[in-house]
Image (cartoon, rainbow, N blue to C red; front, side, top):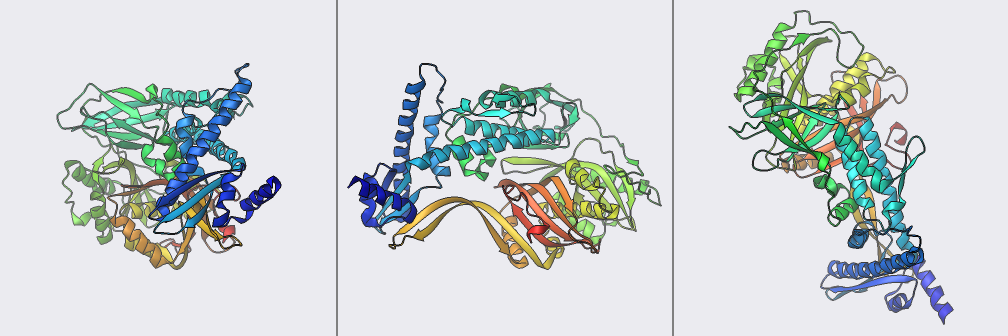
Length: 601
């Protein structure tokens, strides 16, 4: 009889079970199970899962106590006080290997959940793998001066680590082959980062103060912070390429500013349900070095440091100076900057083309706009156009966890000297990744940079018409999202079963479908902001001017944020009208092929 039950139990794990065999699962020592009842299947399933969780907790605690008893003499095993409170998070976020049977359908639903005891250990192994991946991302981010990503990945890894049974068993191996206990090493790395971030207040004007952030004496690529405004801590502000701002209430002039570097990123944890569940369970770890005091800046009036140069930033390509000189371009930008400073946005139409003025009107409605610091405008000729860079602006919003962004402004003048376009710059990391590539002609590199800047700006300013124009009518558009999906199947006997999977869903959309979804997204968000880093440019095939771009993308909106990888294949045979032939997005690199590329389509 025992052998018979064992064989039945073994078959159940492969084939699923019938409702009448549920008693067999309950009596077998190979499984842990839970039962639930409710008016709906969802309600019954939640109860069944909760019942299963409690039994998993008892099982794990029993195994832990046994292991502690076996090793108590030498004291090698150290358990984690946060572990017992975090057991639920394994079930809520990572139990992808449980099964479900509907024992009775609605309205008097009865659901059974079960898992093989041998599968429980896989839960911990999956979490360990994620910790290792997060630490690797943090190390790379720090090397690229992306302090926000480094701190976020380190802290999330530390949080997951604290939820393990035996956190001191995980180690990090450095480039020299030395091993470090992660539970000690990660906080050390975070404190070292805090020690090496330096913030100074450069200029202050009407309650708005410009901050400069460096890391190891170099401008940071990105860092996030909040500050105390005399009453409360602000929402998160983002500094870009070493520049950030503080906005204090009118009349408040402290002798020093208190800031806190963001490292928990609770507002972004929803990107990963496992991390979110653990963060909601495990106690926060305070980091005293995340706080800093900055000596207040003196009130300054902006001065003009604008110049004309013959060399474009971040490239060795020599460019011609504008034939008619620089001054009229500098004057136009200073006119725009002065209007924004005075918050009198009615700039003369004579400075713009019709499209340029339309973009400007959208720009000044993109949050509360302000000029950051003293602009040092650089002007150079680019074909028939003149390009001016160097003006920085900060945009603040009323809602959302992240309420301020710093952007580098790029002005383009047409042959008549009028502002025909305004765009947000890519940022130094992404720009250098494209312009410094010697494999492609300079004209192609410049076209790609300009296109990506316009692409980024169009999404921020919600320019649906422009986005429609840059997608080919037959473009392949693939969007992705991370979700929990219950996959239903039937056993040979016809019983219904559901397996939960944490999956990435990819959807191929037509151009119209994509634009309609994008329109709904724009309508439901106060703001959208995109930041690009880590670019890789390829040229698929020979002959035509087709380029493929893989680029890391940080996406922020008033109610959502994520990090992922964008792949674009662009036709630039007509540099004045580049077209997107293919667009994909994925939340993380695939373990088998990395980021989508030309060879995948």
